[in-house]
Image (tube, rainbow, N blue to C red; front, top):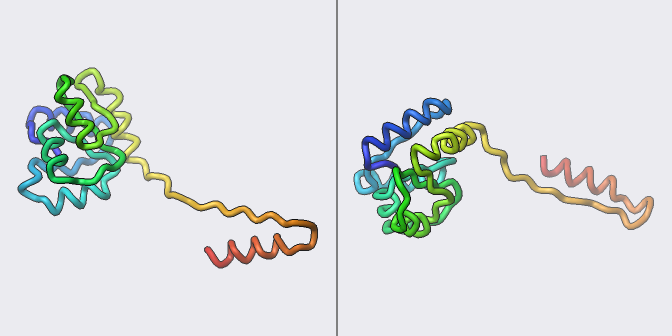
Length: 140
């Protein structure tokens, strides 16, 4: 979500270098439903300072993968980052290489969460192998 056209163009250039398609939203107020949907499902969210302020004031929940992109980082930038729960502040052009890497990582399919269940037999012949097989079969 970028309100600054110049910054959005720069981010678009970096996304193209990473092979990443962007879904751009320029204003939270113009399309709040789309913002909430993207907020919950996008693997990576890039915000400029104005968008970060809007998202923080809209009460969007904290989540992983929020990055504030800005041309310089002053104390106000860091306060906005904390308010919105950003994991990173990318100061361009210094953080271009990092941002291209983050965008490339977002393109890769994310690993899905899995569950592990250990079955340990108390002694030989207790049926742990049969039980483990049954559990695996039922959860396929």
